[in-house]
Length: 294
Image (cartoon, rainbow, N blue to C red; front, side, top):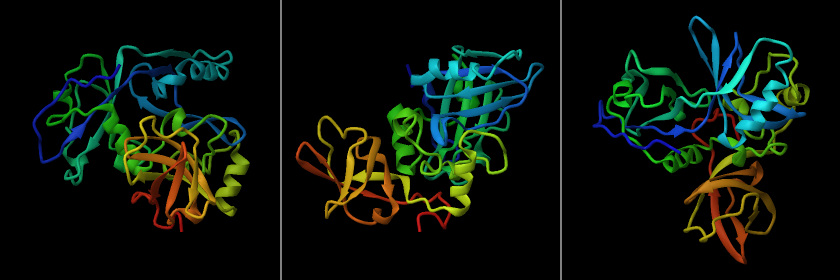
């Protein structure tokens, strides 16, 4: 489960919220850097983050969706071959998202200079608005690592990333369906255009440099409370005139994320749920490059 048992007084007017995510993989490796792993040409397999750690024995901590921990571990072992690499879960570690409060300003300056009990404290590589990723030993005293923090519910974390249009996990990025460029990985340090020899490289690079990206994942908000059963994943999104505009991926409360045609993002949109039209609107995240979605 998630750890939501710590709360402290504000420091420097900055509130941070933390959540523990159940699974982190430990890789006893030399050097490895990646943000996503491809399996089917240029379609997406899994959303991951790799964190290096210095020490006598170099290793990498790999963060992934806990729902695909076992199959992803098997996928990694396919590339192990005969090398002396140990790939195994780390049940003794806890993973936290550290999100700066709205009034935090340059929150990086208020982080402690030395996070003594932290295994790792590093900026989230996807976007500055996502704050930091914190990895600790289970049972660590979080108030000593980040004084003045305030715990939040895991749903608060998902609401924050949906508001910012940050996809995460297999619901937002369905395996074999989501495309790297449409999923905005180029904006989130998730695609290398200089590294060679990865699955889907040629098409991804060609589209990035010469092609047109007509659809992207975007944050969406609903104008009224959602139906009791919520919005089905993959539900078709339509314009007021009934033209297909995209598909709903996932969400919570009045926020979500959807794959939308950029030509329709400034129009009134709706989803037909059981005969009722649920209205929604899309917006372009502020952290995107200024030339995006134009």
